[in-house]
Length: 128
Image (cartoon, rainbow, N blue to C red):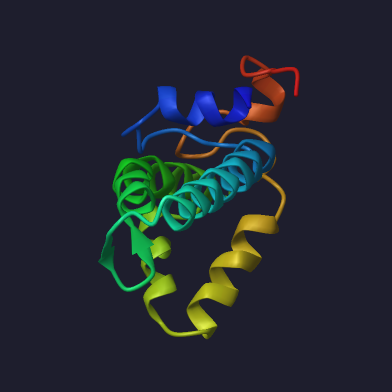
């Protein structure tokens, strides 16, 4: 849960690098919270705002959008790629697969143009 809060503390920070662990723990907890919101929406029969999105799920999606984009950009920076690569997800199927491939790759060794390696800094060591 600490990795999730770390990403939220960097809510709209697009500079720097994020390690794989930070990205994937945030993604996992984000997905679990989204499912819980959808379950509550369905259980309480709350009105839907869009197709398949209840009030809570839609509000959470709006809240989590900027941190999700920010951590994705920082993860791309970790591999010495520009954040504009995140737009590749707009290409149906292939784009998402390419972005997924980027997200599972290891960090670039040492410092790059986006900062020092977060694994080597170890300033974000959290107990999970």
